[in-house]
Image (cartoon, rainbow, N blue to C red):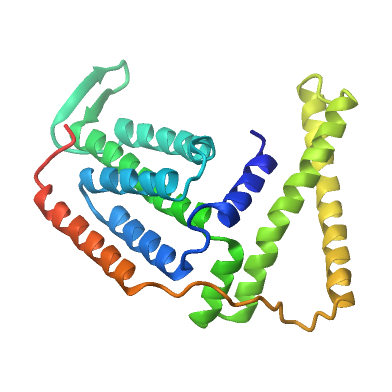
Length: 265
């Protein structure tokens, strides 16, 4: 799945999932509270529980396609895995887990470093599941309305909407230009690849500026006066659901204290 197709699928899921009509206040409260708890703990069990619960909600309750959900984890997990391997190999103190004698020095892999890398991996994966729950179940329109209701500066809200819109424009134009270069056989050999990439970046910058000017002209033609108006109509949060989220967060904190002495290895 290409980047543009992935972004389109994310946007489509945000508007068509089974929880799309639910209150964005409820979904945002759940996602942010679980995310804060997940990244704050020092145990590995709480992030695993958060990941499982978010996955069940996304796939079972929101009816998001499993392929889309797990595709979102691919690139972040690659980067996270590389970072955690670096943590395990070069950080830590105390008891040695593995000691390798080299001609110039002795390379020690510490147990604390390995524990830190595994815990960090699980915490970040749990936090990503919370973020993906919010992204896949809540549209950008609802999020912007929510930001306005909590009195976020209007310029920041409108910038967020425009940036979100231009992600799709940027990806679409870049893929069209990349395909055109490939069809013209401009990518044979490393020098041609570098030259093609530099031409793509330069042309893409000019095309995006031109697209921005055309968008502004279209908005002015439709009566744009500095305020992007949005229909502020979404469901109010249910008190029972909010209470359930609070109880869930309390149970996570209790689980944290019960599992403090349980180690990864």
